[in-house]
Image (cartoon, rainbow, N blue to C red; front, side, top):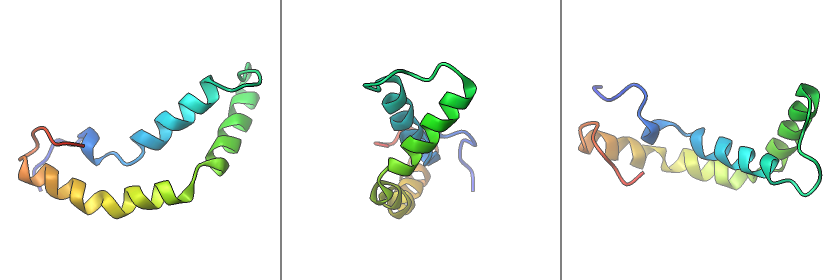
Amino acid sequence: MNHPATSPDLNLAENPIGQLKYQIMNRRDRRPTSLAGLRAALDWEWNAYPQAKLAHLVDRFPRRLEAVRSAAGGLTRY
């Protein structure tokens, strides 16, 4: 299959990672100030991330893949 190897349209992790970063940077309590604190915050946020959102991304992947194929690697709505 010919497509850009780094196509953001095919990166399912981009949205959850962005949400985790947002949640950590906008915490009501203190932001992590150490590596251990960051790891703990990431662990907590990941466990709190709705599994339904992850399932939705996986379920929609065939549509994303087809959009990239149809656009021949060009722009898509994703």
